[in-house]
Image 1 (tube, rainbow, N blue to C red):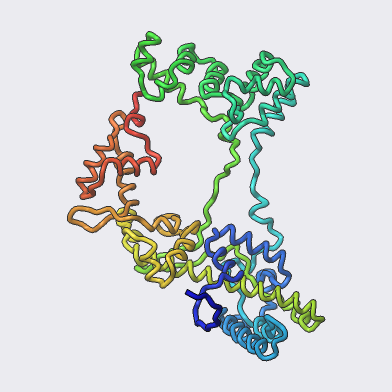
Image 2: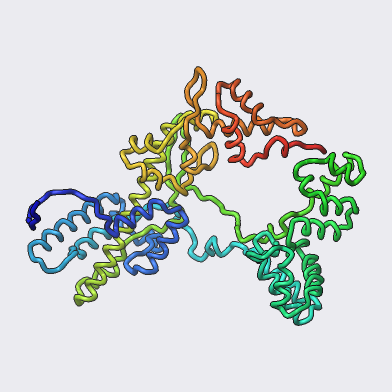
Length: 491
């Protein structure tokens, strides 16, 4: 077979991931807070962009009532004309009649926003009113600084504070708990026995039990400082595993006390703090701001976007005269104008897509909004993708980290997508509805006789939901519900 070089023409289509398309995809999958941060960053970098809310409403032109679609049509015409000019002259690239565009754009309405027109610019931002919690290390170092530690003891104490985890425990990677103090003592230049005494003093600081190496050491420090009974300390030292497994009979026989006394001891131990650094953890509570609202008016539901907090982007007319300057300035301004144009268009496309997807979800899950979570229907990404004529990957991006405020509460959009569980003589039920059925049964159980997984299977079967015991166990763990042996209350 001979090999030779040939020339041939072939017509094909392919999707090119342009920077503008990549930007639109990234904006689509961002959460609301990330989008706000991204817009503010772009406004700092791009001088052409401005917030229309900063302009007084009295200076606005009445013609700004036009819709954003008119601007998009004008921009599209400008792009086509620029493309024709490039093909004819074969000189400048990406040339657009920006003077004409800016004249038309000045008459267009800015991006919609629910921001109040009379909002005072002198008011501080919401972020500036937040209070910051003190870090655990700072809290401990302040107490250590006011203690009467020697210089080498302070060096050891600082090493201890620097090796605390988020829960307040003293840990060194790859070092057993018993060897942690000798390793740090050698580094600080202090005797290991003296280091143990310094560590005990640190553990008595606020929060009590901090810098412990094990759970038992943490609980024992608190018990001793609170002056609890010797039996409590004995249980902490010798029977934490049996206490976790509820082997109260074994504890009672070993300590030669009654089972009722063991119940009382267990009650006191549960009131101690197993994670002393919990209140200083860096993981702050995340407050959810919905991306869209679902309002019920009469018998109909309406989807309204939440534009509050999003800048009303508009292209500044200040740079209109700069286009007629030298070539270098003109090229720079055109690049910034094109970037601003694509950002505004991408944000508007993101807004419209979220509304379309939410409206489709509301339509398909109408019974959930009317009657409650028991009527949540099974639904997958393909169902919505076919209805709104978008790809499944786009639906996945739209529903990730997006929240909707409904008359039933605030939910992530992905909450409405559930696998189907078959029922006898009835329509399929959503897996989320099965989880809620399990949760209701557990909430209503007798604490002294909790329901086993098999009992939950039997109760669900009475409602026509036939699932395996291992499926119930999986859903129970997803809900954060302990097994029946660990849920049992003895006191």
